[in-house]
Image 1 (tube, rainbow, N blue to C red):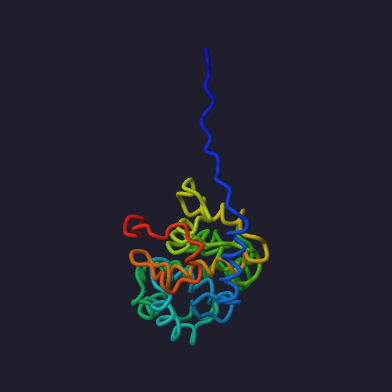
Image 2 (image 1 turned 90 degrees about the horizontal axis):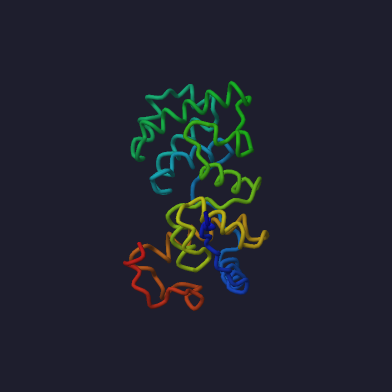
Length: 229
């Protein structure tokens, strides 16, 4: 009986010169990009990132400003209590479930890690409310491990700029391809550049191409962007 080999999709190669020009311009525009979430230590960072799921950084910062002023460590957060925490983050989407996760995370941090946030991916993703994307943001921001957390902005911009191909149809696949094509010396900052570009310039329905610093490098010039969102 004749057997047929399964079809394999050959990945399109990304032009290294395109990568170089893109990220040189991002670097020149914002040499040291950082997360727009406010934090003062590893605990407030992981908490803020976890709270930011399906919420804007602005809304999270508005809630965590007063919160972190009185509870910037696991012990103080537990002392605050779940009801008070829910009250203080009630302006953030899914706040009830997020409050439960934060409290559960604090108990684990105290019981298993001496009140410190573990700085490795396996331990981070085992914490309540902390998934792979949150772990990537924390490890990258703390300069522990280069990572690219793929949110809707990174996903959109990566496809529009041709940094990934059509086979990258999930956040994990986009992250894997980006990690392969972006040179190591740009990796820790690439996450922020792509997010900021998508948040303020290459927006979903009406991208601001007139102010885009990489407009001439974009393969989507002239395309109806409303068809791509």
